[in-house]
Length: 230
Image (tube, rainbow, N blue to C red; front, side, top):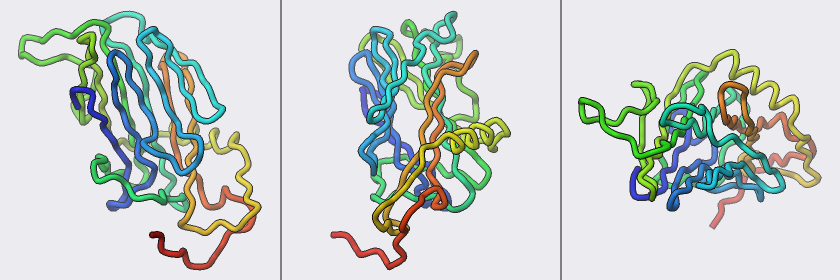
């Protein structure tokens, strides 16, 4: 990724998209991580402004994030995103996924992790002529250069789901708002995602994203075959 282009990514299983695509892009010295589109009114967006104001928002939700973690060194850990996919019964995106989105295959019992870093000053090259940045060798990495010359790095990897991931998912579902429907909703024609954004002590900014389960939805659920859309 370079010259401010938008990069989109979506977790898949057997080639089938599991969530709404997410995107990362920059404008001048500011950058953003957001749902590329949303099937609800509240599209999640995390903004990283050059004045040090970093925040997450979605509909009425607002959350201030830390903008200087860790405090030493040239690289700031801007955000870690965990895409947790339940093994069964999850809703699936309704709208087609852009062919430009990078499809990341996530097998059963695995989690997609996205890491975003930004440099404090334009990074130099090491003895091998490479930029040293805090990503693992197994991660797929994309770079962008901000107007200041500072570098933005996004990497992703697919790892086995850990006990910590599972506990975070269970906690999110325990505290989720009720999903009640007063009108019939057809299976295969609706999709919602639960998103939790916060600051973890000693770890910085984290976001957890997971699709809702069909069992999460209460009220009349339509059972007739969906009608083809124009």
